Image (cartoon, rainbow, N blue to C red; front, side, top):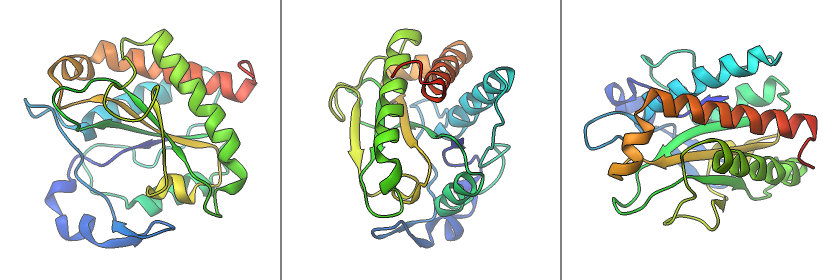
Length: 213
């Protein structure tokens, strides 16, 4: 489980700006992420949801591997994050994020990988997992599908390290748009963060047990 960004990334721009190879092109090691108009950071949101989700999964009997264990560090680079997930031989991976889109836009989007070699064997499974995530968020959280990004709550991306280099079924979830006032009110609520985590937990369980297929 990868909680995107980190709380102190802004303090070491030289590190997070250095270039890494994402499987197709060079990109920054990491970024600071976005934030709401009131300054609530995406890094904190991501970490909170990941913490709630990890607790839910452990109660379900899962072994959880996190790419970062606090929100007061820098990095690691996105290449290191997917290496952690791959090396763990995870049954499934999820990258937790929130978007900084147009202020008028609302909703979540599930980002899914495009075959590029390293990830070829898990494309089908990743798409199936993405469908589980989309369905669970619609059914079990207050978040709606994005009305500004992707199509019907999903989009294929071929320029993100975690999706390009994954060797396990993996998607990235933009849980909502922090730039939108209505989404921001939801995303900054601990109750909603718990709801999102529970929905993601249900999606993971459905995927791993084959309950939805």
